[in-house]
Length: 207
Image (tube, rainbow, N blue to C red; front, side, top):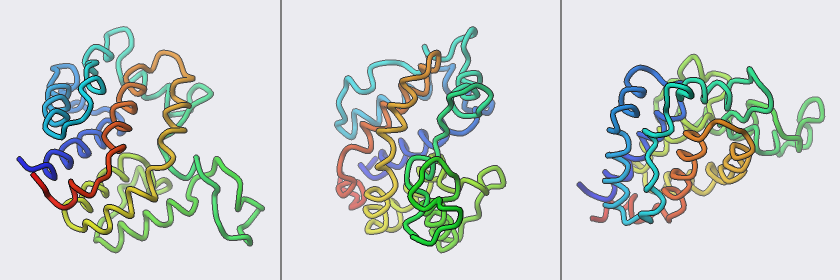
């Protein structure tokens, strides 16, 4: 396994964790398979051991399954909630003539970052899944596209890393304000450790 392959593997796993948990994801978490993969690849990439020493498996319980945590954190059935969508954390547009005076305001879907994601996905030949049509800059989509760029377009990956993950610290801080969602708080903490390192060595495929 190369560093690039390990990095892509982790990015792909995290992308799945921010989608609504399906049967395969639930099984992977409950069995400890996700933790095993994270620990092994994190060790291979020389990421801080303490960043991956808590098991996600233990945060998915019968009394508080990750399906419940997902709904509380991201769906809006209770408030506050904090969807993992980049546009919500940035000014909606840099266009001074943006409609309804939304240009520099925050908290709206389909801002500049979403339009950029839509353009990138189209230029690389990807279709936006129906459930993400109004939020192409959802973290799951961003991580999948980033993983592809690491593999296929190293320069594009470096630019994407610089431009599209600078909202995650605020997202993480917001999640910490919510109670009873330890799975997503911990997963986001782990993701931040993964994305903190300069991606250049991974993009260049060094061992």
